[in-house]
Length: 480
Image (cartoon, rainbow, N blue to C red; front, side):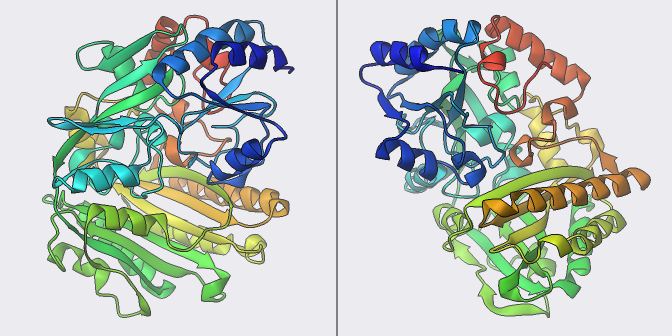
């Protein structure tokens, strides 16, 4: 694909946008530094374009459209660049539309307007000054768009639902160049489609997120010996199945492996109480563990910005990463079996340089699913009738590109075995969370046939030429 004519046309139409051309230092730095994972940073577009306004995004789309229709250009869209799946937000030999110069955080009455180039850390800092917060990334480094259009989990999900459920309005530039708002009162079908539909409908340049009063949190991380993990899974299942399960907790329970801890996995709990109660009884089963590893306990009262900075990590993670996921019912034996499958499958990758990996349980409590439905719904297809749902995320970080194949293949094989086990036990839930999906997974299809059809209809209505299907090949598409 020779996109030189498209680039020339864009340079003529966008004199104020920033163009980083292949071979320049600006290009090299931008293409490397934007992405969490080298699986995307290794991809080399012909050009990176950084618009400075929604109007420039509109001009970009109007200008590139004939080249997409003729098959001579394609593009990718990137905001924060946190999604590791290769090609989701970068494109080989195409044009990458980088939204990082779209800035602005404006607090309004009951919501905050956030431009697509922001990250959650500055949003939390600004809101915290006024005793407010919003549902957003647990990491200060997270970008806005991926979480707000794919679902997203926050510290407040038990009470607020998915991050996408708290998007009151999207500012969207359509393929035609039209700039529209999508909310409960206008373009409502597009609003609901964007709550989980990803990059299939337009370039989202701004988000109005619901705000709420919020003081400090209590929580953090603690590590413990892996023999305590089965008991932690039991505590997690017990809490989720309580008829009065707390809506003020956020719980993640993991098994992790890195050679720095020795030859065996370790347990990791990341737990929070959003009302800032120190050592609340509801967290006691997850914090009073006899086999805790000394000096690796960060539990404390902290602000939302502090918690997000901690999750972002003071330790630099290896540059290559991959996520994949599946979902099951909240069943003790199944979740323990999944952990056993993960541990037994680690052999081929333990020697890979810098490997840090985990079997991470992230629950969707019944309260999350109920409040999600009450806030107008989304595209995900997760009904409260499912009861509490457990996300199993397999996360991996490593150093060398030469290990890509063995690491991705090993964890794909582990995930397939977990899915087989879930099917055998009749505990499977056929849902894949886009934020944690890899390229071999199909989250859109997992939303169910009816929801997928609705998304396809919205695409045909707002993008009749299929610019975001043919012209944006990365991510998870609506049509074969």
